[in-house]
Image 1 (cartoon, rainbow, N blue to C red):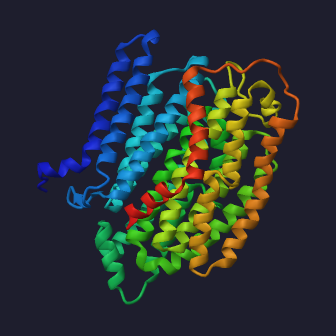
Image 2: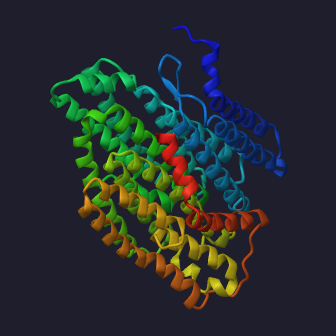
Image 3: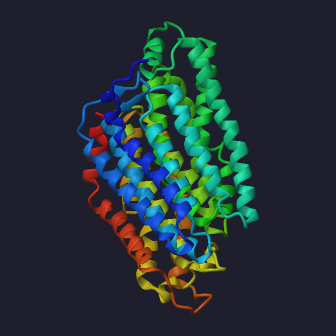
Length: 478
C-alpha cells in the first residue's frame, strides 16, 4: 500500500494528541510528586490546542485517506471539538478529588488522553475495522481508569464487571462485522453500503450481522437490556472516572451509530429502526422508573443516563436529517449536563467523604446558594424543563419523531419524562427545603468553583440561545 504524505494532513489532530500523550507519559516518569501538576497542565494544553486544530477543520472538504480507512468531514471536526472541550472540563473537575485522596498521578491524564484518541479514531472511522480499533482503544483505557484507585475494592470489582461485559459486547460487534464482511466482501463503509443497496434481497446473514452490530452499539450506549454494567460501574468507579465515562464517550457512541447505522447499514434501516424502537422504549421506561428508587446519586444519575440514551436513540429512529441533527445536539448537550452533575458531587466531596448520597445534598442552599442554583439548573435541564438546554434537546428529538408519523413514540417519551422529573426535582427539594446534615462550610478549589459556575451558566445559556448549536449540528450533517 502506498500512502501519500498528504494523507496525514487530515490526521493532524490525532497525531498531535498521540504525540502529546507519549510526551506526558515520559515527562511524568521523571518529575517528582510535588511537580505532578506539570502533567495536568500539559494535558489541559493538549486538549485546548487539539480543540483549536479540530475547529479549524470544520469548513474543510470531506477527505477519505489512508486507503479508505479514515475520513475527515465536518461531523467529525465538530464532534472531536466537543469531545476535547468536555474532557477539558473533566480534567479540571478531577484534580481536586485526586489530590485530596493522594492519587493525583499522571496515569489518570495519560489514560484519559488515550481514551480521547480512541474516541477520535471512532469518530473518523471509514472502515469497519477502524471502528473496532477505535472502540477497543477507548474501552481498554476506560477499563484501566475504572480500576485506577488500586486501594478501592469497589473500583476493582466495577472494573472487572466492565471488562467482562465489555469484552462480550466487543466480541458480538466483531462477529457482526465479520458476517458483514462475509456477505459483502469489503470492510470499507461506502463499499459495504453500496453492496447492500445493490442486493435485491436481504439474506439471513445480513439480519444476523445487523443484530450483532446493534447489540454492540446498545452496550456502548448503555441501552436496556444491555445496561447492566452502567449503575455498577458508575457507582464503583472513582467519581472523576464516572464523570469521564458518563460524558464524552456518549458523543463517540453517537458517531459510531452514525457510521454504522446510517452510512453503512442505511439499506437495512427498516430493520434497525424497529430494533432501536424497542431499545428506546425500554431505556426510557426502566431508566426513569428505577432511578426513583435510588438513594445514591451516582446510581441515580446512571439510570438517568440510560433514560437519556433512550431519548438520543429516538433521533436515530427518525432516520431523517432533522432526527440525526437532533440526536447530535442531544449527545453534546447531555455530555455538558453530565459533567456538571457529577462535578457537583466532586465539589461537595472531601478527603474521606464522597458526597454521593442524596442526603448529602440536604440544605445545600444554606451552605452555598450559588452552587445550589447551579445544581438546580442542571437538574432542571436533565428533567427537560425550560429555559434550560435539556428542554430544547428533548423538544428537537420529539419534533423529529413526530415528523415521521411516530406520534405514539413521542407520547411514550413524554410520559416517562414526566415520571423522570420526580427524581430530579427531589434533589432540588433536598437542597432548598431540608436541613443540612452538616453545618460545615463548602470548601472547593478556585478552578473547580469557576468550572462549576461556567458549566451551569453554559447549560442555561444554551437553553436561552440554542439556535447556533442546533444550526451547526444540522450544517455538519448536510
